[in-house]
Image 1 (cartoon, rainbow, N blue to C red):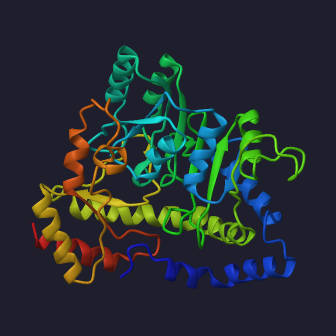
Image 2: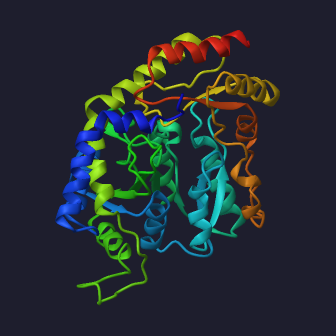
Image 3: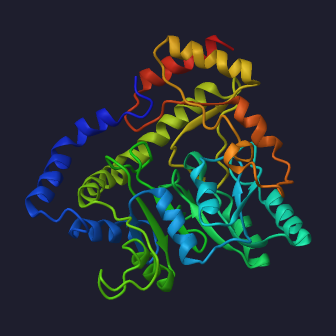
Length: 374
């Protein structure tokens, strides 16, 4: 059994993917070929924004936006404590300070109440200048943007949506990667929409920001690649990856997103009232990058993971350590926020196999092992 079954996906899409790859080989435009621009337009239209700028990976996507916003030393950027390292890493990399916000125990996403409390504390202390918020659409579920956007407007802060796991999610009629002042996603293979290597993208309605990002991703280019108007990066999406994503996007919108939601509903129906299953608030829609249950304590979680492993069922723990406990951030001396929810989640969460090609028999088998060990 595969945790995220890319092998079956390839076999289903093999004729289209092989043809798309061969077309790129025949055309010989391996960097910034026509497929890159076509993909960007397709994704911008799907998300509902004016601009999609692809790049080498999701981490670069975050970093380039911070570069374009001139986030720098002395600035504070608020990130969730329960997330992948890259969300906060880019803040430190650019010289600013990430401040960690606890999350909601049901959705795993940034807690708006604790966010506002942390902003007030930073303003009162005066050590750093609050500049931006990076909410994360964890496990496929968009963060609470209605409340976060209200807070950001109140304190004049920028919002950068980290949609690395959230592509395809929605709040009402608004799709993930359309929130805030800019958004990013990742095309890492295991993501809801993934390529066969690394890749990422920035989304925005801001024309000036989009132009800066297009410049930054090619060494800060101006009118040509030998006219450099700013310091930039080398962060372009390969044409081959764009061609693969074109094929996979069609499957994503035609049936994969529906299928993965069916799998999630089946899990929830079988496991509800037995373990704590994921909560999807009214009006929200998840793309289910992960299906994550909560056990009562670390001992119970670890024992269940071992029992599933013995039965050939892969699981993952996202995430075993809070951001504020990472050694890389041990120099942040102003972290005062209570992150007890994150501390607890790190000891109790367990992610189960989920993907559009997981059949009902496998879901039944996985749930039977879980229920037999309750």
